[in-house]
Image 1: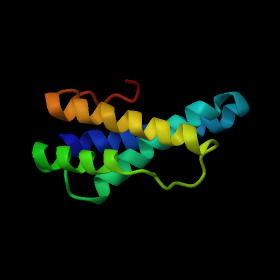
Image 2 (image 1 turned 90 degrees about the vertical axis):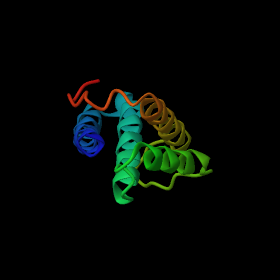
Image 3 (image 1 turned 45 degrees about the horizontal axis):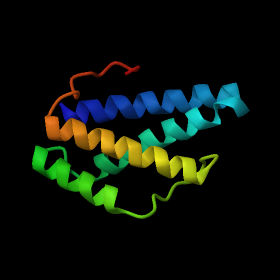
Length: 108
């Protein structure tokens, strides 16, 4: 269920980035937020950590402990870093409570 949620959120983040990019300057924050969500989903899909709740929680702890999240294409690196940390904290809460992964709609 977590893998499906990650795949759907990754696709939604790409669509959100494209929509924000078309809107231009005023949507740069939304673009960075969608890029951060995409980065988090990719980081969690790259390592096979979605098998158990404990493995996912451990991987999220490792990612939260990082000082820097390397990415290209964001408008503001500081804002991007802040959004990545917020996404990681959100996922950590979802993992701890083991809920929210059933919500696979594009807009959450």
